[in-house]
Length: 152
Image (cartoon, rainbow, N blue to C red; front, side):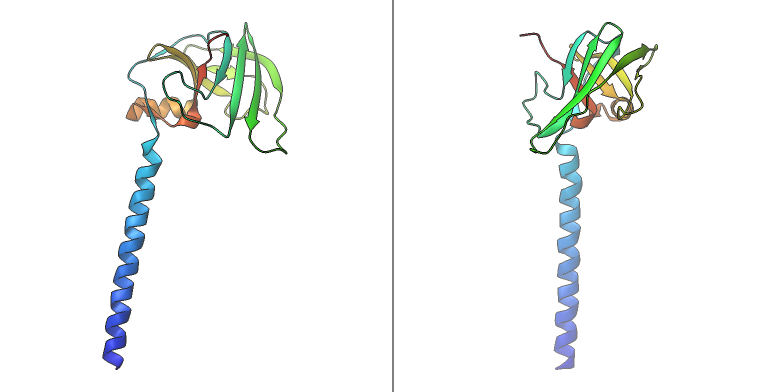
């Protein structure tokens, strides 16, 4: 009887290991599934207007995110969420433009360093991390890119 238990215990351990291994493998693949491929990116000064996560090419839905409005040398940073208790930030200030990035001059803005440019013909703002990711992989995670919205 002791031998049967050890065989069942070993089989259960192997099965558990295989199950966990396959789950971690799936989780790894899911993380890269929705990344946005950018074939061509050119750094430029930001185009005036409203930048949001909604791409004109990809119709991915968002429950929360950030919005940056660029006008002249000033910006406004705000956000949105589907939670009723959410109070969007309202940070305003001037931005500085450099050859390879812009800086949103307000210490409350998350990721104040952004890279403005054109991604496959569309004006965008990339987070610094998003730009580094694009340089290495040619893709950007959805939360690291904001698209200029067309005026209505």
